[in-house]
Length: 362
Image (cartoon, rainbow, N blue to C red; front, side, top):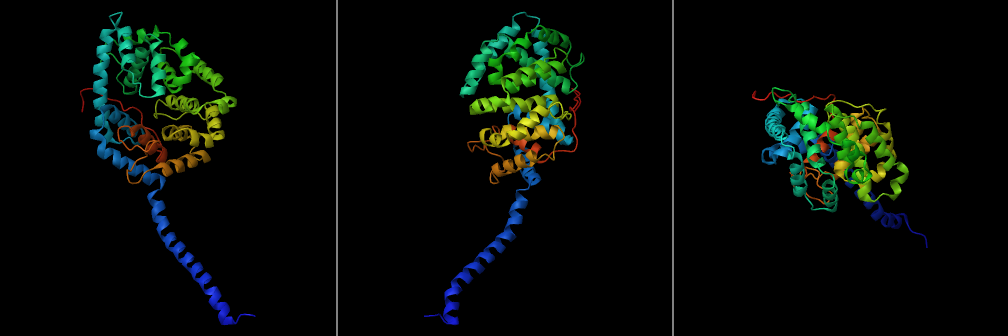
């Protein structure tokens, strides 16, 4: 028997109501979404992290304060970051003066290397592998740290006779260290790729040795793209992190842009492997992948947007920071990851070198 119009209307009414309810909910959601999205805008997330960290900065370890203030100064040029940079410069000069004097003792470097290896953390398998590796390389553990400190002094205008009397003694010591064998060793590269990249740029910056081309060639032989499917997660992370540091170290740590063509091999591999990078690395590493594109002047590359979106997705609005891959929200442990997040999400139009520090002037 056929239904009357009224009966058909009664049958259809629930469906109509459901439809209208859905439209209403979507329209209400549409009103809420822009506000939500506005809160998760790239620059807004960067600002929220920055506010969180700068409120807590005085309570962070000095090494974290230095790391944060140095990078934020180079991105913004703002005077408020100068006091922490000056404090670091004063401590750096004090430490280096002691080391320069102590190098008059022929056994000093070997003793300091042993102490540093003994104190190296071993809480993770990666740390234990690195500790064993460094223990096999004599004075390298000391020499690489000295190269870092001298490079920092140069970045800040402190590598001179007035601030560091006799600093050439330290450079002469470094010139006598066999860094070449160390940075080209496959076992070293397998656990220390980012540090190798840093070291070869420090040595070139100091005029000690130019191993950049040889180290780059050795890295590319060890980690060709065809080998990627056979790399474990740990090996793949070491590779990608190493590649980011060839770019970052070439910029003198965010003081100048780099040549996109010189690092085209890096950028091409990042673009081709982006999906695995997002799955198999962690926020610290993939954020530096995005920064590598930015340092090369390729802010419009689709990979940058993809990486920024992934970072915003990882952001915890309650903690106002990007947690660790295991969800940790400790501010000191997360400083490296979160200052990188600020940089990727709110990249500047120019860099500010240094800062040049005059010891004794506030």
